[in-house]
Length: 216
Image (cartoon, rainbow, N blue to C red; front, side, top):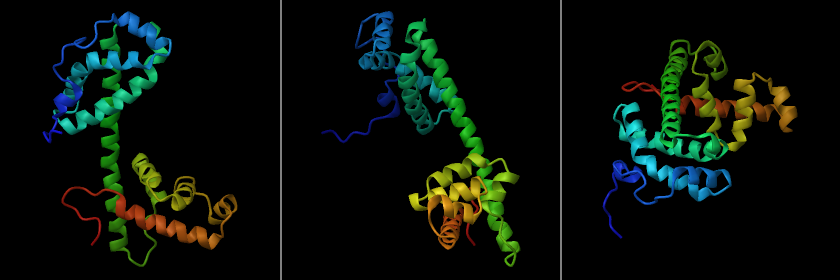
């Protein structure tokens, strides 16, 4: 087996002529897709993936890693949605291009939200350093006073299972310990310990700006 590294262009078929591997009319493939033929989707996708990769590369400012991420997401979204709209698609390349552009826009929005989350993490730690005797700004306060809600939601979703539900209920829904205790059938003391553990993990895992250290 060759150890040659495959470039992003080769992986996504950039420059591959549309229809090079299959000459079935696209209308017939769309009809087959509408009828439940999963192979029809892949034939359509392979015809246009080179063009779609080029679109992703331009929209992601020439960054191949981001373009590859956009292609992966677009492929999954297209695989899920295309069968629903197959009979109404008149131009497959135009339809897929619009889908890819929407996915790229979603990624750009996520990146902007992540940048806001950076500021949340820094301010949380800075407050602890400046006022060590006062209660530190908690993740739930940060979600209220900043626009980094999505960043914290993702961080909570990545917590270990035993902490995830407690953190989501307390930090995002502001549920008191007693309420969480009843819903999860654990003691309030156990809830308190899990909340504290989750808070410590969140403060370590929330991103920081380049050149700045989250911990003193």
